[in-house]
Image (cartoon, rainbow, N blue to C red; front, side, top):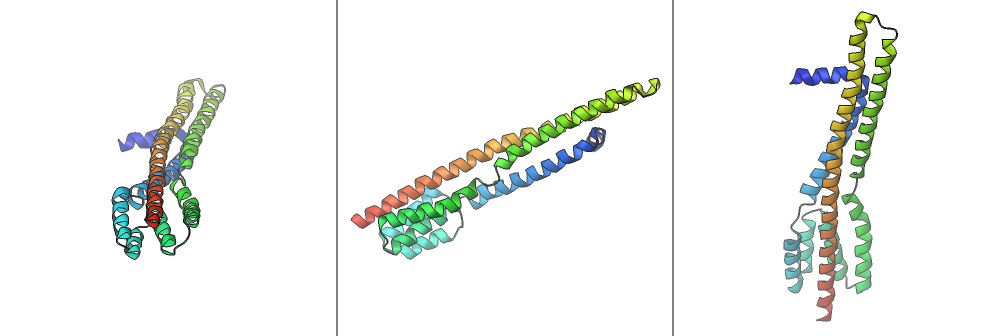
Length: 211
């Protein structure tokens, strides 16, 4: 298996190296985003809201804030901000403005870097096509000058460059596009959860003032 992969890579020529470099950057983005979404942003929003509202009803705002500060997820940061401004007895509109301001800082972090996967998919595909063009040029260009006994070998080498670079480009591009879709969907669900939870907390805080 290893020998087959090594032979495949060697026959592809120099254009295999930039495609591999693109795949390395893509993997770095994928693993970083997976860690961020499934570990850093992993939180039970409903459970967190339930605990927060229970302490707020009991008048223990500091305890409610401490629950949020235990994690550094975007949701907990936004909810902690709302509780802090509520604790300062600020008007409803000021609390809303503070939430909007911190959301402008936190939400872009959720979507950070995912767009590069689409770029890497396009680059790897184009590099594969570029390798195909150079491989075919090498094959047909050498046919006119090669010895008749070596024409089959020269043609086979050129076609190997063309086919292998195209194949590797697609091998890199397809997972990039799949992960771009998967991670994009995950980021959207996290943002929707943050929007819903922050609105529910604000409505609860404002209703507490009217009681």
